[in-house]
Length: 461
Image (cartoon, rainbow, N blue to C red; front, side, top):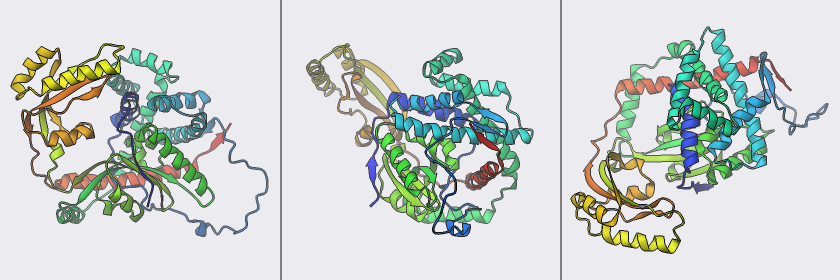
């Protein structure tokens, strides 16, 4: 049985905001390619130890300490400085709430350098193909990232400096992703073809699989060789441990995964377990939403899996219902003791029981000094897991039990209306064709980057 653990329900505010907006937002603004298949599927050009014809007994001539890591590098003449690494590392540490051990920080530093090398190669290759990213476009994307933090660009600049990073680091990342995605659209996408027969085959399989389980999977893929096998396992376990402590799966996927899905935080999209390699299919089928499993040995490396969501193929999911809600909330003054908060919460709960439909919510709220807010078009799926199960079983006019904390106050949700999801239909042929094309583009993109690495002149300092 593979090790499977539940991730904390708490994705801290710093992680949600700092990761989704800081690391993923700038990615999604420029990408436009959404990989759909696990990158553990065999790629062209894979080489096994047997093909290398290595001797069984290896004698090393000369000194080489694999634990000595070089701090900076020159990639085809372009210098990556220690400051570049520090500023990018600060983004990761910020996204994980600043809770990173010194040992983990050193390991992250090595990975950051590797990512900066790849990013530099991508920008250089785009430039060699006369693809240039307008600085105004980079600034526009940067402004959208700042807006996600509800800050002006100037305020966001100051925030980054406070965290030990800089606007230039994020802008460089945006530039690299814009340049690489445009290069792929020019040099790879036009030569990827999907036939109508392939699309029809996918539609037939979807219809045949109607009602079966489908999962939205996140993957962190780490390549491994017989020589570094044990070290890669240790690295994978380290990553899992950090995520269990509250770190963001997406942040670690982005910085550590060697799959092309790293650009979207390791998100493989919706897949049926049978579509995954056999090693991953078993784990994905056994896991529940919010669980992480690994390290799982696959062809050429290790994978860490995270189940983001589950649903039934071509079947309407009650969690896609849209709710109209009223939220009644009472905040506790700063310094309120647990005893006082409990008493206030009990009084609040008693008052809420008197609510007979949404028509009385405002009246009851006024009597007990609660804030009342209307929320329309709220999808059940977007709510915390604990509330999803409760709300799916409530009728219109009924309220949830009180929930909250001393810090956030106590609140209830009253269901004022519910629109059930329409029957699910298979994606149209155009959507399927686009998905298959993207899958093939991303596979070739990985090979493209691998070739750039092989041809690069890299000098470590």
